Image (cartoon, rainbow, N blue to C red):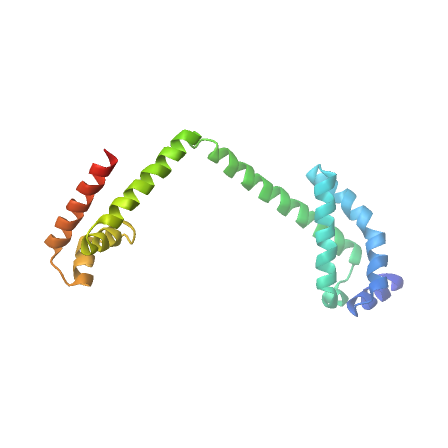
Length: 174
């Protein structure tokens, strides 16, 4: 590593802002141009380049271990660009898989919300034990045997309460 570069790295490792400014002014345009060739967007390249320099400042104390600052900078730039492209591909795959989901109209969403409110009102009006059993079954996803054990009642009693709760809900929905 050239002596001048070595001194800058040592000063940078000590937290010298002027050394960082000099490093930034020397490498930022090169790093940004290099990343732009990968990501095909100047704005993204700018952001990724800034991330690199932020990383360098945060980890400046470890810079003295680097053999070639130039190679280090461009290896970071390449890795940053490739990570960005990989993440972008994953996002695009996810977004395209989401487009296959059915779309609901505002009216359907309002109807679903109204229906949910009706069910909640019906549940609130149930006798205390029936409501508790229904909530344990449907909201806590407990099995009938688990509910019976927790409440100290027969499994058949749980089944009867659930059947009555569902009948009440069906009445409200109809």
